[in-house]
Length: 453
Image 1 (cartoon, helix red, strand yellow):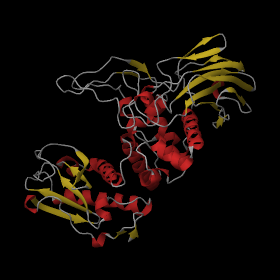
Image 2: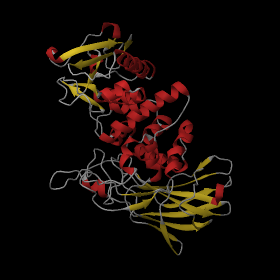
Image 3: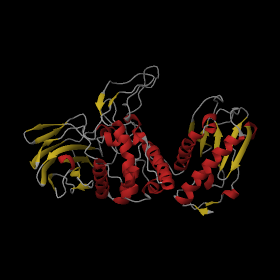
């Protein structure tokens, strides 16, 4: 038995069944541990009782770990003394009107209770069970209030990765976790990535939805980056470098829909800006502790990939093409670097500029043209360690090269630290700047070499 942080006593031995639907629609149910699996009169015949038992065993193992070991709250049903419900989609319950051959699985709700709604397919397919856990984690998070849409996905995948990593020692990440590294000009709180019109999807997918006159969805996003909300990079960063409980704190204590605004209530304005600055610097070096090697897999898999616009039923909004890299293109005028306008940082985004260096010191002058920017120098040394300068708001930025930079390259990181999302002006904003080369820098290095290695 464990007392949850909601002050509800959680003892699965005492759980009661909450059907949710009228009993006349329910053909059967099975309970085990923390869960009830409920089906209607049109249960797909492919599902055996053994399938249900195997699914419930998997779910109890994960739910026990999330609650008893990681210390997360339980969902609302468990808080009130009920089994967590998994309903069989397409079986004739009050939850839906689908056929029993449709596929899929979601976190849904019934009478104010978050729950999991599953088609027959994940029930009979063991390889889908981790996806069911993902939906149950959504039910936990939905029981703790409304946070920004992008964080519902990224924080969810962080929790599941961390659970798996803690159990197995394997620190692998998802294929979409490379997205924020390969387009660092995208904001932290960003749904559907860098859009085809050059703006960014807002925290709750603002600016993403577009329809034809007949109501068909138009694709406004780009390949790969359109799934940016599923990346867990920022969640990993705050768990590593802020607090192990940072993600849970946001869900439990954060009062704002946008999570950087919530963090600022605990950290204050200056420290929130510092947090964003450090995140962008560590991102430039892929300096993520035990997760570093894991992040390099999707980064390397998508390095120098040319992405185009991704369509939907209504086609796409605008054709685009972009070659993925950590590094922002610039032009050099005398000793001044001028960044390309299309990849300028959005709010809380960054540009990373690879600089060819020599000697034992690097000095540049940072001239912000956008508000609240920071600049920092960083490099991977020949011995594999990451070296960072102190960030500056403007003016001279310097770094002694006491360790030899690998490949003779130091990266300049220009970061927007604006973190409060206030609508369309924020979503469309770009943060311009100039970098003036003073000492030890001959120009920029190629954009498609991997200086983080």
